[in-house]
Amino acid sequence: MTSISSFLTSVRRWHLFALLLALPLAASAGETKAWVLLMQNPDAAQSVISVIAQEKDKLLRAGWKLSGEGVLSTEGGSNKVQLHRMLRMEPDIARRVATSPEELAANLKEGFVSEGALGYAMTQGGEGDVPVHCFSKGDRLIWLSGHHEQYWADHNGWKREPGIFWLSPMK
Image (cartoon, rainbow, N blue to C red):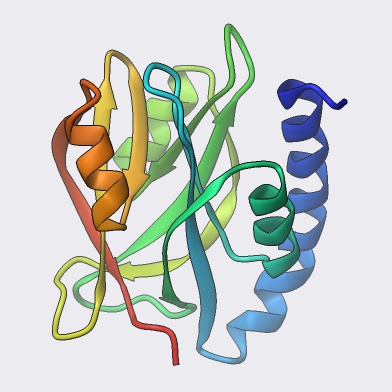
């Protein structure tokens, strides 16, 4: 049986390689699919946003839950923020999503490394758009979209934070 640490390390290496290949290809398309996933654990839950279907499938097989799915834009603009996926391996595994250059810099100072820019999310939602909410517990942050996962977080000591962005609906 693979430990969660070695699994995440292998996913991270594979993801970085695939991200370098996938994002330039997606950039010409104007949008890319994105999935919000949660490893549910009351104290040390983790979430990740993936733009690679194979990574999403591998995480689901490993016990992660799909919290939401939508589309990121590959082009910036008004009312959009660029999402950066971030990871820290020490003192324990922690993930973050930076939505601004200031957040990116602050997370880098805390020992996180950027796994790359995923695409652009909207700062204001409309009809059918998929909201992604930030929750905290101590210094841990998770991002959730699904109502069941948000209910779980609200009832397991996670605090709803003001950070929110929207994905376009899947077509």
